[in-house]
Image (cartoon, rainbow, N blue to C red; front, side, top):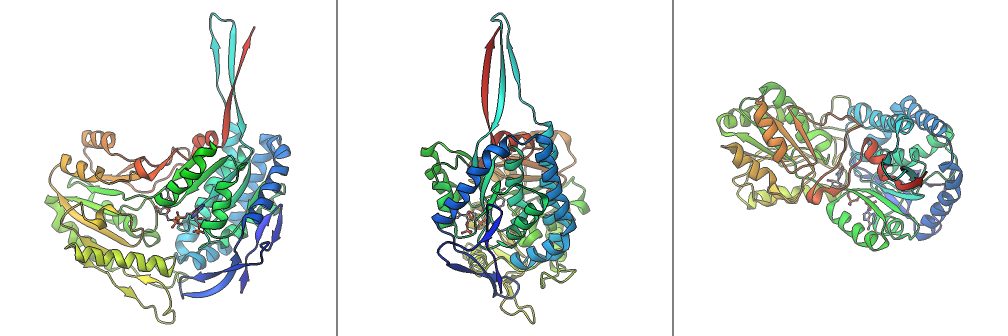
Length: 480
Ligand code: NDP
């Protein structure tokens, strides 16, 4: 049995209360390890370590910080196989995905922010006629909290930690209790890369206790959170009266809008991916597919044919396209939505059933599911399911589809398939989302602002936006 420990002040420590939580392997439904059920005391220890490390780390040269971040990135790359296996086992995602997306991207996060911090600059404003100059300092905040979800465990964990420490902060971080493994392994890598003790502290445990202790801590001055909209609202309620800086990356219900004039084959191939990659458990997946009526019938046939070809299997098997969902309770939630779809007169045109993978009968497998809906206002078209389930329906005009695309409480991303330039410009301007992809999906450039509007979040991550979030601007005005 694996026993994961907290990483505090460069040491691996058991929780103060010696309480542990079972860690399940989604591929077979069995407990394969234990993680600390950390309490307030553990968070306090982590905070103290971070606080002690801050004076020196915040004064460490940018070059030295950069070198350490890049070293972490290199060590992640050198340990790709080990990390990918751990991620796949912990999360249920196909090993191929962990090897080509999750772990390489975690390494890129450190490399990117290791480089970005050497290019980060602040502004100066000359007050002409007043004989004065203003310059802006961008100072690290101090101790910051980073809380991440289970769907892209190391990828999203490092997306926060890397800019936080690059900017000179010290961190108390909590990965999802459902997928703690790679965050645990990251501690070892950070030590090996020479990250000073206390700069990064990783505390494992439940959101309602460990996470809560981080957000409630009066001296943790900024919280960067990725997770569900409800949790985000809860965090905002606690953090706002304490005037903490907040970055909230929350849920989505993203439209995938397909016009008849698109490059059809490219669209079809990408739409299968944007629907079902990582078992549909990516906040950017296009779970509402709207297809121009003139090609709707053809799309429906071709899409279902392609989806049926996806191989469902054990995540460690090369060639598996659809692995296991992350947990039993999540599988049950997704299945409930399939039932709701039936009650609402939706038609399941593909999938919809649990899958038994021989030898792994306890695993959380579900067929990729396509539901034809009669209205965009049904619950499966409005609420986030976050599993291998998409809805499809036809539309007639650009205006109709725009209304439907925007008629949800979320606004994270949207995908548009068309070769009409003017339409691309019109739609991109009017779609209510933080991210728009045209004729592609999940093509990421780490310099770009990342985040959502409406109930998909507040603030932006990525590039200098992240470095701005993790620093305080201080203006200095000098009269000469
Ligand atoms: P949750 O909101 O349940 O959890 C996210 C993290 O917050 C976990 O580490 C969780 O701990 C922790 N948490 C829960 N309650 C509290 C609390 N009271 N105080 C502090 N921390 C708490 O989300 P999921 O893990 O279920 O992730 C799925 C969600 O994440 C989806 O809605 C998805 O859309 C969203 N997401 C958004 C992204 C974006 O960029 N906008 C990207 C990826 C996912 P624990 O689970 O250990 O109890």
